[in-house]
Image (tube, rainbow, N blue to C red; front, side, top):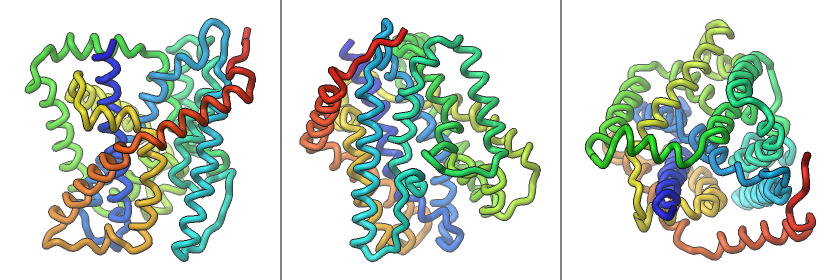
Length: 358
């Protein structure tokens, strides 16, 4: 049991580090940055890091609803933390001298969107527990593909909630034990065999995005981001292709995320790894704290202005900085204890945090 928990904490540790690294690389996705290697690496990371984060969220959402008992404090907790974080970040942006358009319903596409999406996902758990997995998964894919055709709104992060829903359901309908069993079955105890897939996939990802032109890189980044409709992604990138071809791109994206996910889960160590496992245990803490550093670095144009002789060296420095930030932010346990206390307090307010649903 402890080994299995350490393994999934390791998974979360890797993913939260990629979240921080991805945000540091995001300014390089602006065409004015000129760092095409950094742009390619950001595309490669955004291809899978949030989809797999949502997948893991689904994997551990089964306890929200069991035996007709629903833990109503969980979605409330996500929404409360979401709006608190958004408000605090908007205050920081104002203090940094930025023009701020505050909108708690859309979150302006900001980082807290994941918390809002997680809240809606766990609200829907009782519904999905009653639907056949094959029907729910296929239906969510069809809805996500069609939703991209609608020139939409980011009201309540609906665009992202819908486009990432298949990943949540894939995690929700799988059992953690099945994943660890398959890891042992397919890759055994060989570290070389386990690490090889992710190395090959990583090389293939960066190589693919490196040969794309700027318009194609921008289009794919916007598609992976999940915030925009197909038309909006095309407009932002300057490409002129069919909207239905965009739907095909999204469908292919789902398949590629599955391949990358298998490779990444195979490569991640199973046992307790102090720094990595702790980062995973406190991944929500890191997620909540890192935007304050990210917004400050953006205010001084740190990522764009980092010039260390070559694009590759500058990008690798940003990667190392992102990993270091994730590690440092996972060290103090006080924020995580505060978050746990908040969830407990919400549970008491809503009457023990459980309700009967039949």
